[in-house]
Amino acid sequence: MNLMQTFQQGDAILVSVFLILILMSVLTWYFIILRGWRAWSVRRHNREAESTLWAAASWQDAEGKLGDSTAPVARLAQDGLAAVRQYHQHSDNALGRSCSLDEYLTRALRKRLAQEQQQLEGGMTFLATIGSTAPFIGLFGTVWGIYNALVNIGAQGQVSIGTVAGPIGEALVATAAGLAAAIPAVMAYNTFVRLNRVLNQDMDHFTHDLHAQLLTRGGEDGVR
Image 1: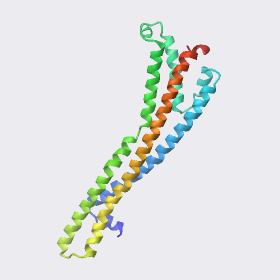
Image 2: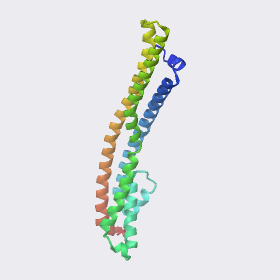
Image 3: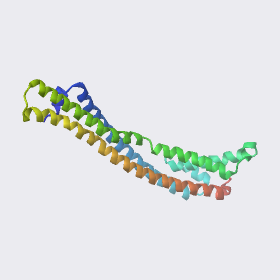
């Protein structure tokens, strides 16, 4: 069975199915590599940023050291410190007196945490879509290929193993191609869901600690 014959002799629909599945497979592996690298990078940068923050001599010192960091927890710390300053700058206004520092800081940290979690989930819909649709696209290619093979056999008026096995075997490869694209996508989706859950839990714990520290110790450095 020569798959090149499928592209040479197959009609536009069957060839399009194979090209779509090949593109899906390439994009899936590209996203797996890219998303895996990002998850590893985020975990490493978060650990470094947390160590830098809690080892700093003051909030100003921590903010300066985290200024160039790309870690999500660094942005959480920066937004938390900025929220404390903004609250005290506008605490004499009517809107500033309408809520406590605790509530204002909680809203600011919750907003940043939601943004970071949304970035971590980017592309997951893409993997889920490929994992759920690729098998059906491959099945459609198989059905279409078998249909054309049977039509050609009927037109020739000859039925033998040689005339049936080749075209139908090539058509069945479309199902295998669909599974080859879907299985890595589904496995990667489940893996990244688990990684995102761990990262979100870590950032959630860090946010609670940061919130408590800013409320109880911010006054030592003039932040509060």
